[in-house]
Image 1: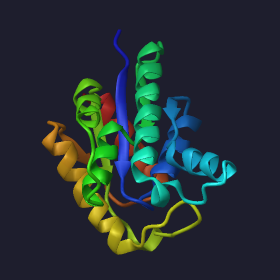
Image 2: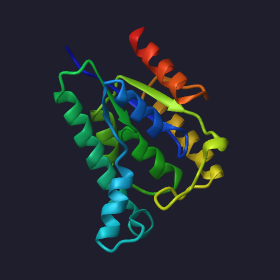
Image 3: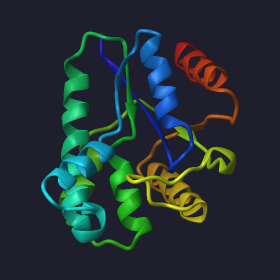
Image 4: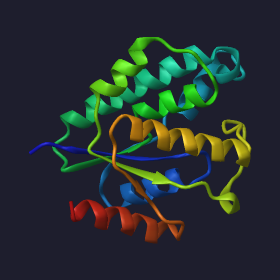
Length: 180
């Protein structure tokens, strides 16, 4: 049986981490977002904000990490694996911020295809910036637009998760995957 790889994506402060954590608590195999890990690792190396000082290197590290997550998901014996963001997110962010990129980014996006994509809409009431999340709410709205555009461009049928409690949102996702 092939493991279904399911992406939970959305702009900053849309509830992705809370949803992934709750899905994991229910016993599903989940991969967490890797950008914070990359940011914190760069700080340990004396680079305060890798995204600002070397955006291409930051994007390459994220893409490499997401490819590794995808490959690890393929090796599991689980029926479903959930990922906090997917490889197309890298292109969406690069396009959103006008960052040029090499063909390898497109190749990765077309080579590693997910089974389902759930998009979380911008939600001003839960938006917060911190040391690893720099975007204000207006930027979050812009990022959302680019995420939706990018996933659609690469042929994904996006399922929008309604704003609700974490449990209700998780139930929406789980009910949806059970019915497909």
